[in-house]
Structures are given as structure tokens and as C-alpha cells.
Length: 191
Length: 191
Image: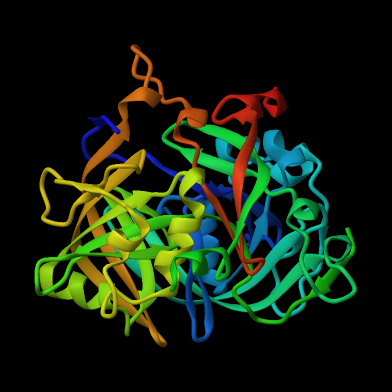
């Protein structure tokens, strides 16, 4: 496959689309769109979130020590994009975009009612990387859409309808079809 | 949306599917499947990769200071899954799965010929997180499939055909359809 060099840049995908809930000093919920986030440890379950140090969300996390990662479903792409364009210092983004909230179980920032997968996190540490901060938080509780879980406990991917972000291309896409089962289909190459 | 609690766990998605190239002490290329990875800074472009400290890939990165992140296209899901099941200590996974390599530009580990997006990285630092290590590397060069770039330089998402991993569900999925344009469609909520 012939390749073209793009130079050092941040073109990389697929990425998740998330809305990060935090509480401001006034106790109001702020939402920030984030795609630079993911699992970074299983012992214990830990989430890494990278964001610009000037963001209101960063200030809120440092002050309160808590945040919630709300996975964005494909039907909320426009609302999520909006929450990445404005600052919570200027406007109540959740109210403008019509994103209702409900209480979390172990932290003060709320879950988004319409998010099918929400992770409650407590700040552990951070890494300074130029203008960005890689915030590392322990995952205290995970909430998943009940309608996407069958009676045996199996999660139905299509039921979550996750929105995929393509960093560098600046597009949001839906999931297509299941291609393979992990930890299973690769066994074909094991004699 | 009614939610069910899963407890503290690593169920989170969508995630990228990547194959990490490193060089062993004997100079042979090792490939490790990774989905715990993503961009963590723009100043400069930086990649974060989390992996178990016992992995051969971790030893190779610590010894050589270099790695390449190869994005996996949907047509290589089975091969990528295989590379997550076996250790490079026991078998030449690239040879078994038929994954040809070509030289990188600035680092010693190779690019995968059939990967449409490859990031050359140099080790900067790491964070110890239980049994895992969050390795942080500067992105020195990015290679993208020439056939997925139009004459104006625009990247065509479908041309990359990225494989999406659903952590916790343990499934690989393809991309579906474009849902929205980032930094654009959210303006609908701005008066």
C-alpha cells in the first residue's frame, strides 16, 4: 500500500466520542466533548483523559477530583459537536443542547440520561504534556443502558449505537457491521 | 434511559484497533494488538499506549525507545485478533499472519504494508498503573494510505476502512455511515 507522509500530526482514528461531566464552583454541570480518552489500566480499572489545560473541565476536575465519562450515541452527534465548540464559562451547554442529567452513584457530577454508557471516575494523577494534561482517574462505577443488555448479561453493541470520531478527518461516523469476535476468531492461525 | 450498574470495570468503547511494531533484541519485528491507545497531546503530537508490563512489546519499547502504531483496517480483523492471542517470545506473529513490513522513516521498527495509517513514535515517559504501563511517545511521522487522500489533501474515511474495537463486548466492527461534520454541525445550537 503506497503511503503519503503527513508529518508529525494528530491524525489518528477511530476514537470514541464522549461528553465529560464535571461540576463548576457554582455547582452547575459542565459538559465538554472529548475524543482523547480511553482505558489505561485494569488493576484497578482506570481511565485516561487528555485535554487542554485552559479548559473549564480541567479546572473543575482539579478542584473537585471527580468526573463522569458519558459515551455519546450516534443520535447525539450534533449536540456533542456543539459542546466542543463553546465553553461552559459562557453558556449552560447542557441546557442549550437539551441534554438531561441524572445523579451518579458515587461522584457528584451527573450522568447524561441519554448516554448508554457512563463511567464515574475519581482523579488519581496527571501528566503534563505541552499545553495538555493527561488526567488519570479510577473508574468507580460503570452504568450501561439496560435495554442493551440481554438477560444473560451480554452487551448488545448495536443497542449502544456508539458514535465514532475520526480525528484528523473531523467526521463523526456510526458503527457498521460486526466483523469478528475478539479472543476467538484469531485462533484460526494457531495450529 | 434506564441504566444497569456493571461495577468498576473496563467496559468502554469505541476504541481503535492497532498493531504495535517493535524490534526484539534479535532485531526481529514483534507485533502486538492494542486498543488502549490514542492521542494525548498536540504540543507536540503525542501518543499514549497502555499495555501490561509483562508484554514483550513493553520490554522492546523500553530497550529501544521506539515503536510504530499501525492502524488495523477492517479486512485484517482476524489477523489482528491472532496477534493479541500469542506472544512474540514464542512465535513470529507477522510471518504466521502474513503481515508484510516496510521500513519506517525515522525509527527502526517497521510499518505494516497493509496498514493505511502508521505513526512513528519515540518513547518520552511512562506512568505505572497497577500491572499496566501507560507509555507516552512523541509522534515523529505519520504515514497515510495515498489512495485515501484526494488531490486537495482531504482524507477519505471510507478509504481507510478502520476497524473499531468494542472493549468489554469483545467484538470488532466496521464503520457505518458519516453522521456529522465536526467543528461544523454543532453550530446549529449557536445563535
